Amino acid sequence: MQELEAKEFAQKHVDEMNAKNTDIEGVTWVVKGSLKLKKGYYFDYTFEFKDPENPPMLAGAPGFIVLADGNIELIDWTEYSDIKSQAS
Image (cartoon, rainbow, N blue to C red; front, side, top):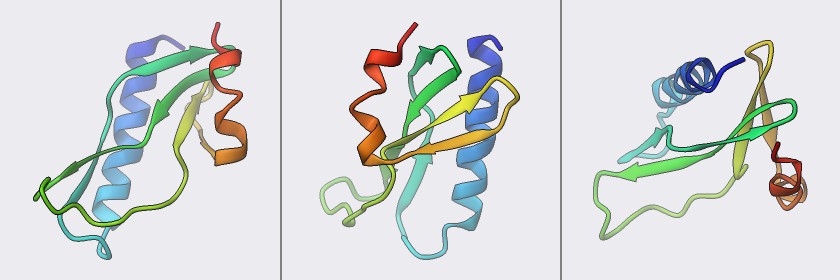
């Protein structure tokens, strides 16, 4: 999979998250840079806030990997520290 295709899958993933987001007002997930890994492309969960001066408190997974088959693998905080060492 090429990076452009991975970004398309990533965008679809965050679009679905934004469509389902009814709990956190003023937050939009966005796709920014990626990191190429052996098994796909890693993306941080990145946000834009309607009111950046007063952003809501957020917690959750730090990011996700778009796998070669287009599936999404969520990365938890215990896996996050290993991501950079997996870069290819």
